[in-house]
Amino acid sequence: MLLDEHDRRLIDGWQRDFPIVSAPFAAIGATLGLSESDVLGRLARLQQSGALSRVGAVVRPNTVGASTLAAISVPAERLESAAEAVVAEPGVNHAYEREHAYNIWFVVTAPDAEEVAAAIARIEQRVGAPVLVLPMLRDFHIDLGFSLFGGAAVKRTAAAGGAAKVDAQDRRLLGAMEDGLDLVARPFQRVAGRLGWSESDVLARLAALVASGVVSRFGLVLRHRHFGYGANAMVVWDAPDDRLQEIAQGFAARDFVTLCYERPRREGWRYNLFTMIHGREREAALAHVEELVASAADIRDHAVLFSRRCFRQRGARLSAA
Image (cartoon, rainbow, N blue to C red; front, side, top):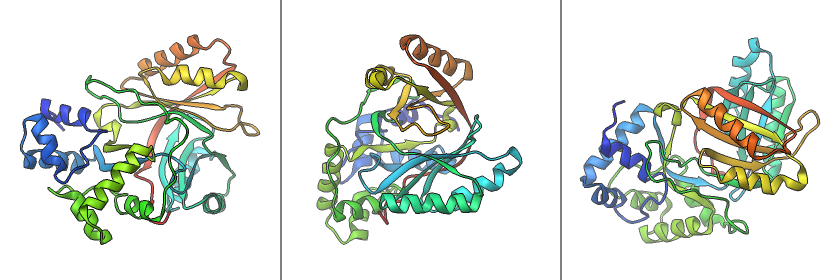
């Protein structure tokens, strides 16, 4: 779809720091010099095109329920049927084909670790192959809200000291918004109506979740491939354990690194540090990888896993968490 300057400013400006006020789209319009109806119309067109996944919360992993990254290796001729079996599991909110022997990668979210394990077991049974389970140990930078059009990017790193605990009402609120806000003038009033709360209660509790770090960002959640970001690489690293934190913090400080986190080694899987690089061209992404390699001479090995296909990309199902 064709985008004008207002679209680009809207996309770059409100992937985070979305106004948590009664009439947020009017507030955005006032900043852009647009009417409320124009902002809503632009967002509706982005959503209809598939470029905008939702306007809503990105929840920090393992603060509401439990989640894990996982991967499975299947022969090429079984990839389609295996992917269907993976996404048949309701708790799978992301699933991709990647260039590696482990060729299907996915994220499972559930109310607790026991239910995550049960979901993994069901997937193993349906696919007929073991799953590599890689829960997050530490996050150094997790934020896909980056500038697409050269606007001012704000580098966000992991919250210090861990995010605050959530209660049952927090879970209800996040579950009520898991598919994003309705594109109406008073979206938080509509959320309040579904919960039987006041709008002011919704606004106050959501603002507190953002301030505590449970919600890592609130705003436009995009599908980057629709904007020309087709060379997206998950890069995994075998970093010395005693140097991992220092190396990870250095990687996380790079503008082109959109994710950086520690995960456990497993038998047959030597990598303990994961980064994500979103790029428009494969060559540019690989050049960024070489930049990281040059910055950390004691890295023992790394592998670049470009994504090939997206089987599922949506917000985590929090209504049951």
